[in-house]
Amino acid sequence: MTQATARKSDVLSAHARDEIDRWLGRYPADQRQSAVLAALREVQHENGGYLSRELMDGVADYIGMPEIAVYEVASFYSMFELRPVGRHSISVCTNISCMLCGGDDILAYIEEKLGIKLGQSTADGKFYLKKEEECLAACCGAPMMQVDHVYYEKLTPDKVDEILDKLE
Ligand code: FES
Image: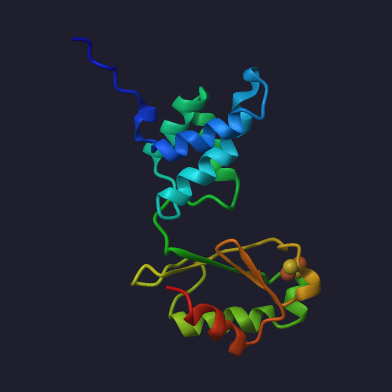
């Protein structure tokens, strides 16, 4: 009986492999690395919002990239987290348009409401207040924030309460 050789990509779920294969199908066979962003996004989503080294190595093995190249991508893009964080990621924009419309006050309100500072997660693991340094490209809706994948605009403290209080 032959024994299958363990591979680092064995850590990836069947669903993650299907998703990566779908993206690989969009690129030429010699450009497999083009699927790395989609692969990391899917794997992070399945892993509760962050990438472990084991998962990044799994992606590198599956796609056929050097592990260091995957670490470079994961550490460059702010959408990837390399440590455990709260399951709902909140990014409050405090760039110029949002700042002029009260973005800093919204951020201070959320910090007070959740009892955490930028870069921290709540003790119950529900929220992560992400440090966001760039404009999120919704200036006409300032002040705004992104929660998980959704943009919320023209924020007020009441609106913040309504948005955050209904999340599980
Ligand atoms: S400055 Fe906040 S979305 Fe552009």
